[in-house]
Length: 238
Ligand code: UDP
Image (cartoon, rainbow, N blue to C red; front, side, top):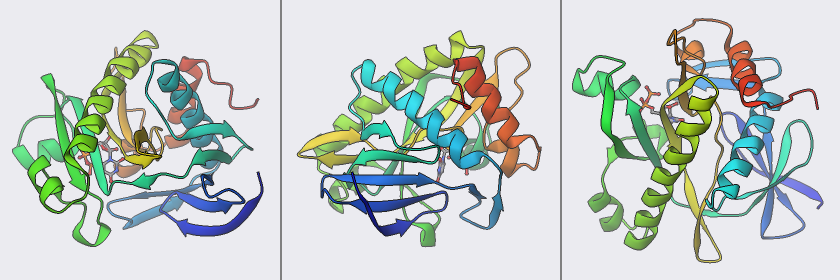
C-alpha cells in the first residue's frame, strides 16, 4: 500500500493517508508527552517499542475476538490500520486505584477495585479531556447509544484478556484507556495499546513499568517498556 500525505500529527503518532480510503498508516514517533502536552521529551527507541508492543497486543485481542483496526506491521515505526470514524471519547477501565481517580476522589493509590470501574472522558485537549457519562455522550451525539454499549462491552472484554496476559507475565494491569471507531458500521478498537496508555506494575514489588515513570520523572522509561515487552516474549530486535 502506498504512503501518501500526512493527515494529522498527534502527540506521539502521525497518521498518513494511503492509496485506499479504507486504510491509513500510523507512524509511532519518539515524542513522549504528559500533562496535556505540557511535558514533552524525545525518548530513543520509543516509537519502535510502542509500534511493536501495540502490534503484539492488537493481535492477541483479535485472536480473542476483539475487532481491532490493526492490519500489519510495515516497518519498525509504522503499521497499517483500518480507517475508522473515531468516537471522540476515551474508555477507561481501572482494576486498581491510581492517577486521576485518586486525585478526584481522594482515595489512596493501590486499592483493588471490585468490580473494576468504567469511565468516559471527552477527547478535547483545550478542555483537558473532561470526564463525561453515557447520558452526555448520547445527548451530544458523540456516539450512538448502541455503539457506546458495544465499546463498553469490548472495553471489559479487553480487561479479561489483558489482565490474564499481564498476570501470567508477573504484572498487574492497573488501568488503561481505549478508543473506538466505526468501520463499515462495526465498532472496532482503534488508536494503540502500549505502556503509554495503561498502567502496569510488577506483581511482587509494585514497581511502575508504564508512562508514570515519565510523568513522575522516575527515569528508565523505555527500559521499563522493553522489560514489559520482554516478559511478554516480544522481540524488539526482530
Ligand atoms: N490515559 C491515556 N490518555 C489520556 C488519559 C489517560 O492514555 O489522555 C490512560 C492513562 O495512561 C492511564 C488511564 O488512562 O492508564 C487512566 O488515566 P487517569 O484517568 O488516571 O489519568 P492520568 O493520571 O493519567 O492523568
